[in-house]
Image (tube, rainbow, N blue to C red; front, side):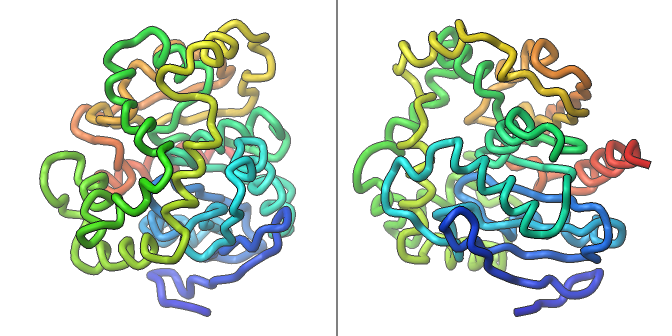
Length: 303
């Protein structure tokens, strides 16, 4: 299936990745370097449309529905959503696409996955770009020691409750819609057409449950003090990032507070951080031109 884009056709495909049918969309020539985008919750591949259009003239741009989401396969067992499997999906997808490495861009859960890929397979990540996505050790620290982040993350406990997907889908997906609104009414970027696409993705059978399984499978959540302390006291070496890294952070994020990036330079050898006072969790939608420009500048280091 194809759809028109500013730089040609967005091509849609499925691949068997670690036993799960993964849907992905691509734009640009496969002969170009790969730029791979990984979305968070409650989003899907189309969250990156503005980036797909912008970068497709000089990159092979790919964005996927991660396992459990939208048009991708939906394993039933919660343990199939553990971080190691999410990371392995990205590694396998890069290989499936015929590339040896990529510029990896992730937001929210996609950012957490991207951090994990850079830890597990640094040779596969030429450059890493994170938009409001937490490094596991720093997030564990904030959940253990920062009362404000503890309060901001209480929603994670709801997300772990059985049957919560039904509440999120009730009243025309009102809860999920409000997640995108950042508490300030309908944002300009979320017009009727965009909202219709989001709702269609949420209403795919099992898709919201799939997204909530990420939270159920994770050991990093408020109140899980033993696991959080274990992360903080662990050998830091497996959590080090040895690839050039760009972090873009909206400081009005009501889910992931700015403290989550304090001390990031202790884990990242080559780090650039840009924070934005007027952007929220949904930074790629709110200031897409700025985001694209900074990723462009960062990616130019390849040449």
